[in-house]
Image (tube, rainbow, N blue to C red):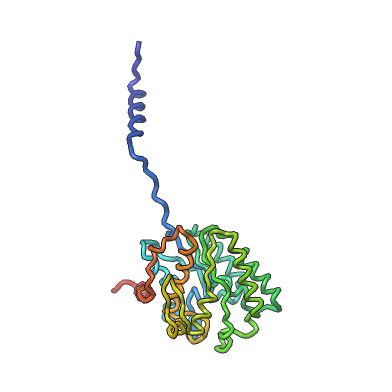
Amino acid sequence: MIIFFPRLNLLCRLAAGLWLLPLVVPAAESPWQRVVVIGASASAGFVLTEPFGGTNTAKCRLAPYLDAAIQVPHPPVKSLATALFFLNPESFAPMQVEAATNAQPTLVIAADFLFWFCYGPGRDDAERAQRLEKGLHLLEEISAPIVIGDIPDASSATNTGIISPAQVPSEIARRAANQRLRAWADGRSQVTVLPLAGFMRATMANAALPLHGEELPAGKTRALLQPDHLHPNPHGAAVLALGILDALVRRQPAFPATDVRWNPSEVFRLGLVSMAGPPP
């Protein structure tokens, strides 16, 4: 004798039908979904005539040019960088790292985060090396892909009064810091080292600057820096944003080069447009 259970029969039919439906796989999250900037004044924007910020300072911020360079749809880049970083890196840096990790970033940009862990007051090279280790230890808390700038030679900025000679590490200390950074980064696949030192060297010498298979010509690159010999101007911030993304896509396959707008003039224009906001 066969006994039918209507509800069970219906469930069996439904279960059997599920095998006929296409498998729905959730779309992978965009690597540009939550981009966060941490660091100091080169990232936050700084103009000597506007020490407390202003219209010209805003035009030097890194985040709007990163937004302009990332041409695929993405939420606005979040910037935690501050021009006050130099006053107390040991206080500002942990706060920035904590806020960045709380944002669950898909990418962190730390172009000048380590600068003041090498520059600034220091009795000797050993003390500067110890401070650098503190900065690297903080960055170890970030598991997301991260772009970290190396330490540039900013000694010429002492001629403009923006930094003092006592704040500048020796060449030996600076080279040792960059060697340590690269050794630290070698064992961490999510880390990309940005050659910020090369950017500074080329711009100060007004030399050619390579950028994603192209080259900004010699005689044009000095115009990317402000007269203080330290901070990028708006054009420089746009080029620096592209330099960051160029280093990233070379190192991290998850970030396609096709997602980036590589024209510096267009990135500069769109960055300024975004800061102006929508027309009234």
